[in-house]
Length: 332
Image (cartoon, rainbow, N blue to C red):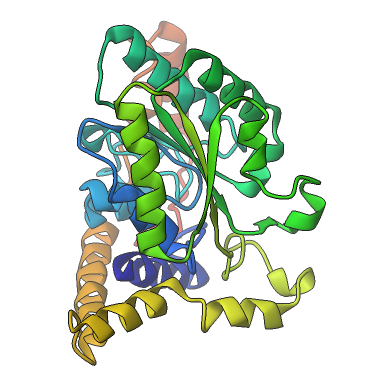
């Protein structure tokens, strides 16, 4: 959880300095991310939304790979073709997210259905979304399909109470987001998304059920988006930030876990700060390494579509290569 918090703060600082183009934090939602990630097993698939990069990091995606994908440099496995905050990790079965809200949910259900058809018992697909995603048609199609097919998936909604600038009260007339699953015959659970242990137990129940072949579960994790939607947003224009301060303070998931661990004698006073300092040093080192790597070669523009690039693509590449080149301000 600290790794996510520290990395997010450093990435946002880079964006403000003009060294990366865009960023979206998960501040205040780390318990929902890590508590659910801890349930996943190596054979499982992860289909994330915007704020689940920490799931990939938990499963083994390296900080260097994550930052390379933010810079879009030559070490980026997607060769600079994705926006920042859209990481992927093939080795750990962490699928790249889409900026199109909720389009990933049918993908998650489809992966789960494919595993069931293939007879891959014991595997689960975890599909994530925000509360705004549950208002999209793709969500309803996917949950209906999951219920009918008894797909081995856990669909997780991080209800941070804001769909960019739309509050939950204007998002749905349903008493809870979880009830949307019930309407499609899918068992639904609502848990405290800022309590990492509550998250773990709720998601573990759902994952165990899916592994047994007993079908999907829709899990609503109630949390709060403490930060802006992204680096392009100013939440003070549309919400009461005094409410935000309550969630930033006494309801902060890291503070709550720290209090619990200290009371149990599992964390010494001041140990959190020492851990954060080490993470900060590691992240800064990774940034230095990735900033030193050049952008992807121009030739990569026409790779990965056809087995052999067509004559037209080669002609277009030659025209680009002969034209003026402007160095990106995001590469030093």
